[in-house]
Length: 461
Ligand code: NAP
Image (cartoon, rainbow, N blue to C red; front, side, top):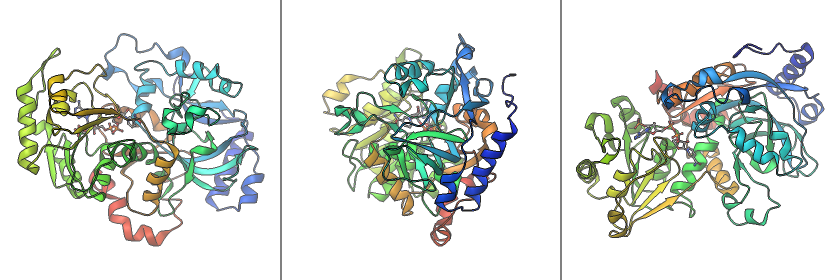
């Protein structure tokens, strides 16, 4: 099949997928959803194993997700007893979609092979294609024999913590489980598809006041920011804390700002344009630094950092809020970590979940130990944390940051935008939903919260 072209679909498949979509769009009752026939295959956004070296030797920025992402017809995998099939109405692009589609830091097929060796069910994931996507909103189609809390017809969002709960290491904080994986990144059959395969303990109720695409963009980034800012497993921010947020209008940063404001903290948002500064201010963030306008050059050259620039940055933060940050919300990595460690308050915390600009980090350790600072690693969220974060969305206390919506066929284009930092907040992807704006079952709450829910789209213009 030609790269990027749709596989010709047998008419039987079209009928089944269409019937699933129609049943959801017409609010069919649970028994009708349960009785729907399942297709033998479905369409998904995939990367292919035989193309994993296609960008070898190229600089990261030239690796193009539009070339590696295909919409292929994928066989429906068998359902394990603790799993559910979800008819995906919408999904989203996360930065891990970028990593998967540019095969960095390594091709994800290595993760699938490792999972394939673990069990007979794990073996299903080891395929020459990888269905990407770590977010989804949709409707449960079928559940496995061991699933108690969910049934066909349930409207859900999906979080991406994939854990085998028969492993003892999964029973304190499941993010510490030896076999913890990110669904759709380290497992196959992710959310950028018409049907997703998920564990039942990834399911959460869909917020009723949101459309499918608004509900689809939150779980990965919102839960990550909840754990980083709110949870005892993260920074456990208390009221009065000052928090420096890199990428304050980005995927995780915009949720972090909301948690800081809700919890009585003072965010200092860093962005890279006047438009982003205006957007973040409208979210309620009073103190914003435009890093491009200020012209910070934390690295003199590829190997040498410039402490004078760290100092200039720290001085700017003090001018704005009169103090050093108690917490630094860190994820750009190599480009910013030296500055983050330097500007954190004496006794303060740098909480980090990523290293977008490079994962070999350099900082001056004297500023860490002499000032009793801490660097803490953080990664996604356990089920309880994801559930709490989703509950706050459902109650309208945290809002989606959807700025634009793409079709499934445009997944590569959307990943390209995120790769090149051209987007605001989150990008949604429609799967079975034929258009934006569907899926709302609590229009009253929606009406009340419309300005907040649509903030990022209004700024996108
Ligand atoms: P995103 O939507 O692309 O936002 C990142 C923001 O960071 C951008 O808006 C940009 O803002 C800023 N930024 C980018 N490069 C920068 C640099 N060199 N220096 C300073 N700021 C920079 O991505 P995201 O969804 O927020 O994810 C951010 C990172 O976290 C990614 O690496 C992702 O893989 C990771 N992540 C990890 C987890 C986890 O569980 N461990 C979960 C979610 C995300 P400005 O240009 O406006 O400053």
